[in-house]
Image 1 (tube, one colour):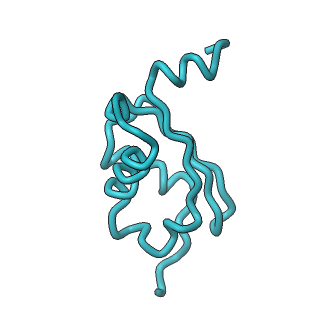
Image 2 (cartoon, rainbow, N blue to C red):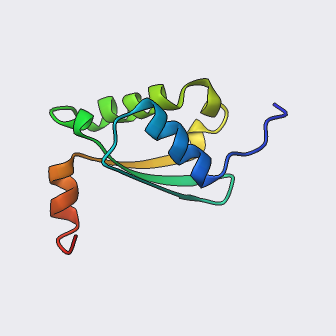
Image 3 (cartoon, rainbow, N blue to C red):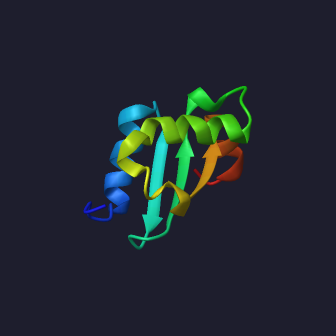
Length: 86
């Protein structure tokens, strides 16, 4: 494909550009990535819909790499429950 592998920071930028997020954190090694994404847009939706929104935000830029992206998608309320010390 000739495209350089994206960095975690680049993936964060792609997600934020396409989705209104409270918090995004991406870890990875260039091949496999793990993203934690907190967005109000996830309220009232299930995991499949949330992941679809993230894929839509990433668009063509990540088409090759999307299979290597694991996600934890949370609403602000779910995030607050998951991080009691925040």
